Length: 139
Image 1 (cartoon, rainbow, N blue to C red):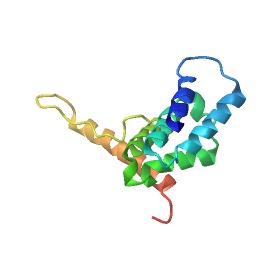
Image 2 (tube, rainbow, N blue to C red; image 1 turned 90 degrees about the horizontal axis):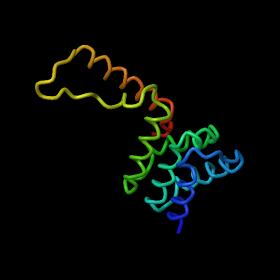
Image 3 (cartoon, rainbow, N blue to C red; image 1 turned 120 degrees about the horizontal axis):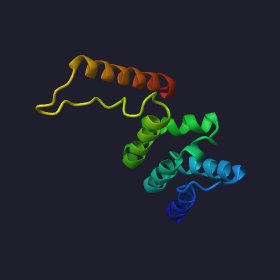
């Protein structure tokens, strides 16, 4: 039932419809709560919908940090949630989406190895910045 409710709520934001700000704020708050659900499919679906720019803009700083933290702290049994959390972090925290992924040179591909090195290095710096900002001090 929770999963179906999350999917319906997320569908409301798929179009470019004008939404009441109070409704958007409440929906973002509830999705952030459900991102910590004990059922992995529910938590992953909530986080997938939270990546929507309208919803993420309504998260409080604490809610945003708790959601981003899931990329590091979600249990191993919630693998899909970890993936969704990593996509959330990549889309909303890293300076350029895709920086955390090193580009691999394809066989026969021409390219500047130094440029690839700098792109990868920049990505690693962005990931390190994320880790120092969002990794709980206990770990």
